[in-house]
Length: 117
Image (cartoon, rainbow, N blue to C red; front, side, top):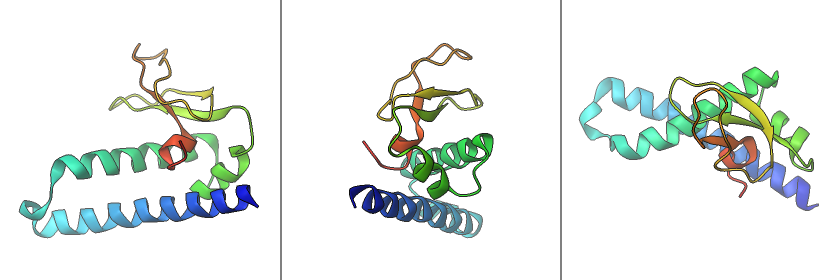
């Protein structure tokens, strides 16, 4: 029961991120002066990294990835450094994993990106 609720919440969060990204792009194209760029950069960067991680792992939708790993002891994770797409299997609550490609503690798990902490 808890897993089902968690999956539903993750799917809604992923859809909200996609919608925010689309709205942001549309508004930015028409009236970029209306946007708070600092807030949007954080939101869209997380969404982009989560979507990219899904692509790399072979999942069509975020909720498919979440459903596959929500009860597992390891989870796909991706480096949050711009331009780095290093991925690894890490703990589900990982927020500062080591990136072997760029050397930073910037690897974040898919569950954290989707809003599970």
